[in-house]
Image (tube, rainbow, N blue to C red):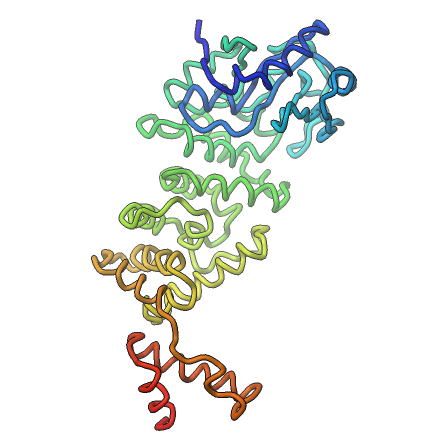
Length: 388
């Protein structure tokens, strides 16, 4: 018997939620990511509970017990309960009645194994009781321990239920799979065969899944397999992931944490942003990265204009694209630019210069100062402007 000894299980807020359901005679188990991550020693962020209580019963039981309840996914069987300030997503056991590759029509169930059968991967069909005992109806525990990501039963059936599972398969393999095992062959074959179904998914769902994949510690092997199978081109037309392994190595040289947009920019400068649904902030950053990867703007100037973080991103991307090593003095160069302060301000030129003329004067003075390596003094810069 495997038992989890986790603080989030033992904490009074969790036990209070279980107590309400158990007092009414219902089953209740932690399920999915929190159980999987605890077994892997990974961070647990979300606390999900599966129960045989229907959503209306969950709402009534917890409202009567003075818990705040939110019908976040009521039509799909999910109610969020706040215990203190900790949210618990409580979902009724379900079984699929009808699927179309994007959405499922479900029926509520009282059978934990039926609930497990409708999940995607064996490692996500693990449950834990209020005392931490693992319930493993589909032998997912052995797969978690081995780092083996595989579909429940027939991979093709699971994928036809929701084509997003193709991308989830690669994402989970990148995050939780053992490098020595690689990608499950049966699952990969099903993903390749059914990849056309990805066209039925919304850009929002595809984007979310792809960005999660790219924030894995090292997604390069999985991304390469996606490319070889044809899956990658279905979601990122004209992408080329050959620079990605070099980028990930370069990130480790500078100690950079994984970043999805930085890594996305390493997958081809011709990839259309229209294929994804990025936020305005993400889209703007991606554009700025792409513009400067191939520019000849000095590194110190990039650090001055955009900050040290941006300059480091450009360093690792340029090194990956052009296959050259990172110079040993780049961090000092970046810091010199990031910490530089131009000695002239608008006040120096007012009221003689106003409006557009003032802006041009400031731009000219700043560029002369940058070209000097940020070394020119105020007096020398004023003199250079008079001579310009």
